[in-house]
Length: 271
Image (cartoon, rainbow, N blue to C red; front, side, top):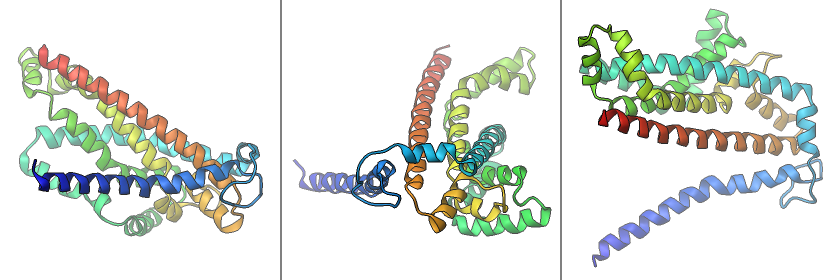
């Protein structure tokens, strides 16, 4: 037995568990506060009540912010999935030089701090007169979510044999028809998975939304920030519980889509 291997594995396991604790412990602390009876945040929670969920669903301000976030996230998911799929196809099937440059540019929204992106988008959208508008929100969130869609679709597209499209085109199909009839059905679960990732990123995005929000129309994360400054009631943990459950459901849906994509690609390779 190699002791170095054992120590390395022990260190890796410790690191993984430390990261999990760092992520999960704050969630485990904040979520029970949503069921606490006092009108202020307290831990451990005192008593048990669902009144704060009723307060959230019964407040027109919270509902307006939630519906705005849902509309923005849905449009962002659709737009990002369409543009991201086309860009990924050009990157994977196109010239290598273009693909390399595109990958470098694509890393920008991930590497650059969101506060810097928020300031840039604020200045750009302000000059265009799009601050606080639906199109402005969708455009900004599309920029943030695009890398995750492209990477998800690229992972699937790189496993699809390009000869399948070549065979379709040799039978008289155009490149668009070959992509639509042959390649797209094989990568469609990954496209949908990337769209779900874009939905989560848009719906939970606080920094850019804070800069772009108008006086009246506010997204749910911006509304949460305002409530923290003014009230700081257990409505905030109640919203956090709802967002957490929604995110977990979407992640499970994404996992199912990936499993389906792997099965479809395996069938395509056998064919």
